[in-house]
Structures are given as structure tokens and as C-alpha cells.
Length: 407
Image (cartoon, rainbow, N blue to C red; front, side):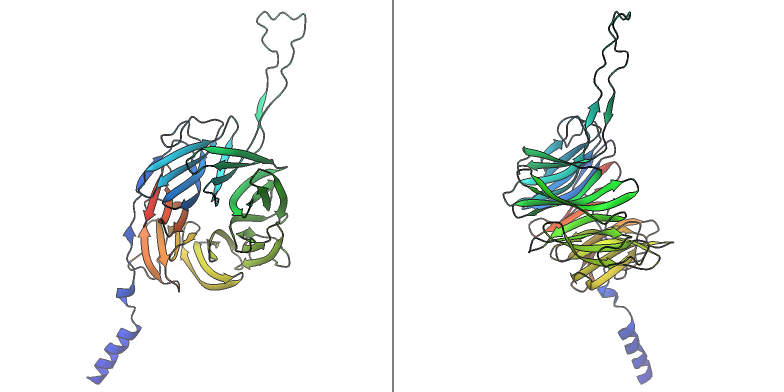
């Protein structure tokens, strides 16, 4: 009898506690934003009870952005209440083609949106040769219209009521793609990538709030990308991305390494931390306050979503990886959150073995234990959290964006 009791006791000690496992719950958008062409939501910001979304539209018209399409694409900024009611929508564009990629809220409540654009160029109208029979005066060689590459950084300042205040631009020598804007005291800092042929370099650019640009510098020489960034209390920048080349004294070990950079407020790279696994390609695509970072690890036969909480550069507190069809996007509210497209079991979620890749949202505790797990109707493209609003995501079904709010 004692042996039977000991066996049962031992089983209870070593068996997983099913009561502590989290079950998946379904989340649905509180509102949908339909689109017609290749539209994108690229960033989100929360302020008070307001949700601000920015991105790019190629749809000729929209019921949630005022006005008609200008060039082949326009940027946009829209404001929503946490209830899903739209406050206002603003189109950012003209006859050229623009994209909007990142958003930051200033201390005065105004909103800064960064993006990029091109210019429409045309040749001089030719004069028809004299003595030529041409009664309708039709040009022999009509005016040629062409578009330059996306080589201008565009900067828009908008009031919190949706009124465009200022527009500034910076001319780049090469194709340029801003990925993140942050407010740094009286200045703005823009980070992203610039392209020349097959080479990709990160870039740093600062601007005054009156539109004076300075301190343009590049990061890497041929194969480095910056994907996101946060500003630190000393006004330095922590940026994340990927690289397959040496940066400072840090040499690559994998095919592509995930990188975390500490950059001064004047654009000087001060520290480099590499997350690497041999024979893999890694990237950090997302970072939030508290050095919570999300990314992906690509092997020859699988991809994992990676989530790591750091205490400082190169000092992980905890990390988790899950079989996935996407990168992980993260945010920090009361707890850390991550979203990705799950393609396998998730430790801590009971009976989760998806037959098809499924978008999920996970909430973690202080030691990476799961305290909440949710399925989404479509993959999330942006995520953010605040004490006033809760956790907010935008999903993309390919036909409409969904606004998801967890209070």
C-alpha cells in the first residue's frame, strides 16, 4: 500500500499541472478597414484613449481616408477611439508617390509621421521644326514623364485633431526606406535603410522640429539592416535589425545575425550585440521599452519566432522560441506581449497543435510563463500597449485591416 501511495505521489510531483496550462481564446477585431489595392499599416502609437495608425494606400479611394489617390501611393494617418469609432483620417500625399512608415507622439500632443517619396520629372517641351506641315501643332516628340526612385525622406507634422501643420523633406543620394522615428528632446531621430545596387546599409538621420536635417550617417557597408528602435533615458538609441558583416569588432557567425546596436544621439554606433546561431539567418524586427525584443530564426527546414527579454545589451533575462511562419512582434504593457503565426505546439498552452499556421497573441509573466493566449483572425502587422488603452493590434487579412483591442 505504501508503494502504491509513493508511486501516486511521485506521479503528481513530476506530471505537468494541467491547471496551470493556458487555453487559447479567440479575439476578433472591433472594427474593419477595407481596402482595394496593396495597402499597408506600418506603425501604431497610443496616446491617452486614442489610437493612431499610419501606413500607405494604393487604393483609388477609401471610406476611412478622405480624398482621392494622388500619385501611385499616398501615406495616411488615422485616429481611432478605443471603442473602434474613427476620430479622423488624413491623406499624406500629392501628385508624387509617397509611403508613410513610422509615427511618434510629441510632448505637445502633435504627431510626427516619417516616410519616403519620389519626384515626377519631365523633359522640356520640344519646339516643332519650322516649315513642317503640322496644322494641329501636335508635338513631334511629346513630353516624357518619369518617376525618380524613392529617394526622399518625408516628414509630416500633424495636430492631434488631424490638421496637417508642416511638411519637410530630405533628399538622399540613394533609395531610402525610413523604418522608425523617435522624439529626442527638441529633435527627431529617423532610422532605416538605404540601398545601392545589391548593398543594404542602415542609416541614422536627425532633424529639428523646424525641418533642418543633420547628422546623416550609415551603419555597415553592404549587408546591414535596421528594423526598429527605441530611445533611452540618456537620449541614446537602441536599434535592432540584422547583419552579415563585421560591425565595430563584432564579427558574424551565422549566415545572418540578429543585431542590437547602441547609438549616440549624434549617430555614432557605440556598442554591437549579435544574436547568432551557426548555419541560420536571424533578425530582430521589433523592440519595446525594457529591451523586450522580437524576431525570427530561419533554419534550412523551419522558422522560429524568437522573443527575448534583456536587462542590457547581450544580457538576456529569458528567451523563448516557437515554430512559426512569421517573425515575432512585441510590446510591453503591464506584462510582455508577442504575436506571430504559430505552426507548432506552444509550451504552456494546452492542446495546441494547429493543423494550419494560425496567428496568435501571447501574454507572458515576469519569468516568461504564459498568462494569456489568444488566436487572431488574421496575422498582426503592428502592436502596442499603454496603461490607458491596453494592448492594441492591427491585423491584415489581405482585404481589410482589423483593429483589435484588449483592455
